[in-house]
Length: 260
Image 1: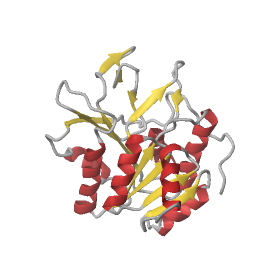
Image 2: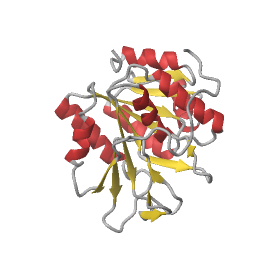
Image 3: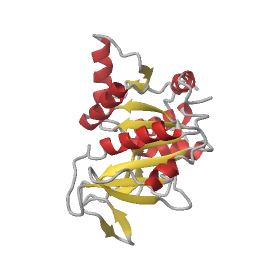
């Protein structure tokens, strides 16, 4: 399957793609603690010693575009069996349905590939509350912990301090480096759309030397970076794939030895 252009099978209800055993929620203080061992150990349950962080956003995408995004990653990751890693939030529409985001991609990958462990991180940007029928929310906007994850690490600035949206970046990089150094994992980053936080993540990953895949046509920062490289020199660890071309994404992952 080389092109994903039609609305396909992914349902976008609030109950879609959940973990039957529940999601492990862990909280840590940024700069004061190491990444919890429990979070790291859950990651090592992945069948293959691979970890791919999916960075980005969905600003500017309509409902069809978001659904096509999920299908692009569903098919592009066919045969993957490592850690699928992203932000750990989910947004719901006013009628309680899932509003598809990049943070829903790991759950889609895990749902379709045996051996995948879906993990997320999120900075504490608002007060934790219980709303409605004891629904745990992460801020005043009703953002929830993504139920498609096996575990989510929430990063806070002390018991009462809040962070900006990049507040978990250093922490998740530490987690990935720990898997790499202590458990022989291979790491990579994929960039889809995204803004300022995505720029921080992706440029950091490229500097570290991890394979970085940029999805051309996804918009915003990702396309800006591709244009930057087209007018200059592309780092050897950067790879570009056209939006919707799931077959090409899968081929790149095979060539990089993330699917075998």
